[in-house]
Length: 305
Length: 230
Image 1 (cartoon, rainbow over the protein chains, first blue to last red):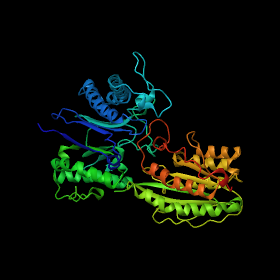
Image 2: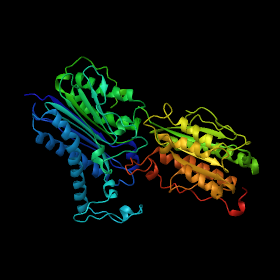
Image 3: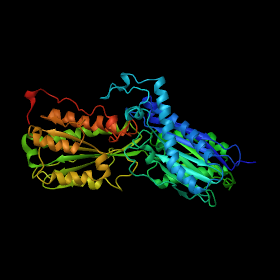
Image 4: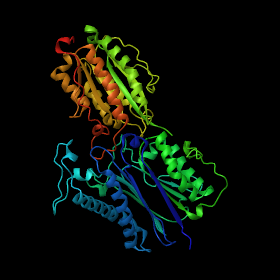
């Protein structure tokens, strides 16, 4: 049987990070469904990359890994026929706690293997936190690994969107109309954000569960904030999501998969300079060819990429 | 594709006391000389588009030109000194400006550089409160270049601390024209460079720029004490 949804992704190191020798602080993990009844999962994490978050490259990789694993468990635990009211309640209450717990556990395991050195904290007033049995770590330890997270899980019956901190999730209808399943949080400006390391982070998750029925999205685009920051206005950013759908329909997923990294690299170079990660989840029966592409990817010339 | 906008705003004291000992001439000269360095600093980072504008405050506060002026086109028009020190009005005015449409969510934290030789004569606190009531006012990097002996008084220092609202910052002090030129140039270049290239996101409750600005303790005042003229 054919798959109902297909996911693809790419992640590029920011042009300014290449210049200053910093690695890509973003991470992405995806799980394509093995069949029509299986779940699709996309998880994108964005490590802070600031002086305080000197291990955020590892922290974002852990975040994406944990999200993939915990979301898979979450969906399996609920089973295929759980009432949506129960899915929504569990998605609000349980999923954020499970994720934070898993990420913090991964941080502690990493710290056990690689304790902080005096040098790591030389620029800060406090001493390097030490892992002690039975004691939680201070915020400063988790801040070293700090990362934001956007995820989507698509089952046969519902779509679960979740977000902690900055980053974007866009939903594109078959006619190209773009919406945000989760409202934009305008307080995330001037490079400030909440994240997995924030106090009571589980309470700050944005979560939404939609029944998967007509009109369901043709495409869901997840991206780290480096992508939206390449565009002056939301309208331009929305256009790129619509353009992706156009390319998927006219040129196919193979073409987009092949070109995506180049497009994102060009965007970082010409725009924000930040790391950029994009995940695309496309509904198979919405990708019927509609003829030659008119997409322009908001300034990207595909022939250059 | 678009780089991220960064607004750099001078708040320049044009009060009567700036007429004494050539302070206003030194301020005009210092900022004019710093502009090419600002352009160079801005060019080094293609991922930020730097806009420069200024407010002169004396009896009243006024923008000296277009609020959305790219650094490449910015020209410093010499300001004159005379009148009172409407610093509070200048604060409120910049607070009003730091909102849409001038500011978008994707802007970098703006820089507000206050250059003054003394104390406000209007309701400074009301102006500051207005500035800080705006999200971009709170997130801005607010720095002070203090001119002359009077600006070193406890009262003035208290005002500056309230404006900067950050324990890791102190005002840059200048007691002669050379020191003023040096401080202004540093503010125009090193600060601009750091803010336009944020080292990353902050999730520790700090402002967007603090962890990426290790240099913000300032530069030492230039020139020996005997060279002090203000």
